[in-house]
Amino acid sequence: MSTLTDVWLDPEPELAAKPEGQPKPKTATVTSGAVKFKTPTASPTAGLRGEQFYDSAAKCFWIQDSRGAWMQLSCQSMTRHLDRAGFSSGRPRDGGNSPADDQLCEIQLEHGVDYAGPLAGFQSGYIEQRGTRILVTTSPSLVKPAKGEWPVLGKLLENLFAGGDGIDQRSFVFGWLKVAITALHDGEHRPGQVLCLAGPAGCGKSMLQNLITPMFGGRSAKPYRYMSGKTQFNLDLFGAEHLMIEDEVPSADMRARREFGTRIKELVVNETQSAHGKHKNALSLSPFWRVSLSTNDEPENLMVLPPLDDSIADKVMLLKAHRQPTPMPTGTDEERRKYRETLLHELPAFVHFLIHEWSIPAELRSERYGVRELHHPDLTDAIQGLSDETHLLRLVDHVLLGDDFATRWTGTADELERKLRESPAGHEAGRLLYWRNAIGTLLGRLAKRQPLRVRSCRTRLDRQWEVVREGIKFSIAEKE
Image 1: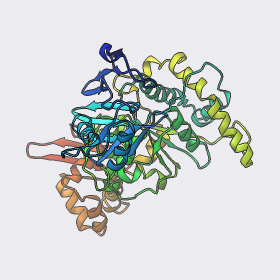
Image 2: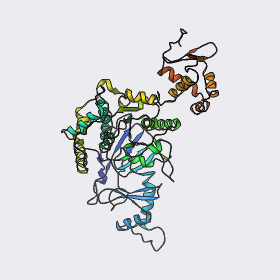
Image 3: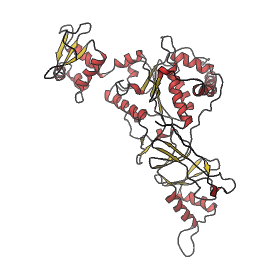
Image 4: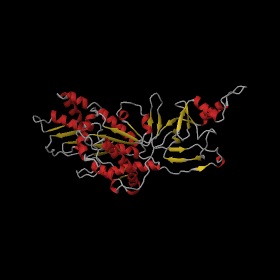
């Protein structure tokens, strides 16, 4: 995705003389692929601070207060402000609109917006995205980089991701953070994987998530209800750069897990997202999002994650979090408060390190995401054990390859499905094979991931599958 470029901030000469106390008007145009940013060239109403806009969806007006913050006004309140600015609300004796009414109409016709509210990744002001007129009402508060030391935060990251199993995951964490923080500071739209942290309770994974929020602008939202299909409304997510999932109740239903995987792909890859609020029409917006997820590493908790199939594997950073002693005492409320304040105090130095001092190693770079994904093997094995294809292999072992049965089975996918459905485990097989061609898809995944036990070969008439008991060698039949 292209970097925001071509920025101009030039005053309009003919508008140079402004009422005292009002900011000098500027124009700005920024392009990033299909995203267009443009600030109006002049205030529509002299005598009021900054610009005024009409929100056609909420049927209200927006103006800036004395601090420059955007405030929402009803038509009646807006009329009072116009009256105060010199636009009388009194109707002329000969009929017609009052000057305030004329000005309200002017704002509605010339300065209407389709959406007004916060938009992740964007500073406060007026923008256009693919023809949608947007008033961004708040800005992220990005951490200002400052050269310095970050020993406590460094020890926390070491404890979490270099925990004695021979796999140092810190470079992947640094790379994921660097890409996101740099993009936010540069005003660039760039996709990034979902950061999944799995580890024992109390190891510090939630603490890290709560530090990511200020690094990304200080705003977070909870997306799991939307991502798991429990609600279709997601407008609250568009005001937060950090979408944070913490210890959600996992679902054993594979359909729910796959729905979650589909949402991951949408949030990671798609620049344009559908924003849908309750009792509101949906519209397309382009927020800057990063998703982090933390969960305990027991198998039942890992079921919150979708199966890591080929369509989603590169969109997930799956890291194992280790439990080590905290870098500072945390036995009392005061000690915990001091620990958190110390970590927050070190963030400017850490952000400076990521942006200006540390580079992503060449072997870890990704053209699409900046840094490539990592799947910790312990977690991959655990998730694989929860997959549909592993469940299918267990069923085949139980029904066809048990101690009292053959050591191998050969036939078509349809024949295998029929045998499973007609067996005493038929109800379980029916729950597993609930979608069209499920059996063929799952056998194909097993052939990739368990090549010593499952393989296929094509005859003149059809595709044959061979499944052998664990520890048994394949026959000499030619492998496809």
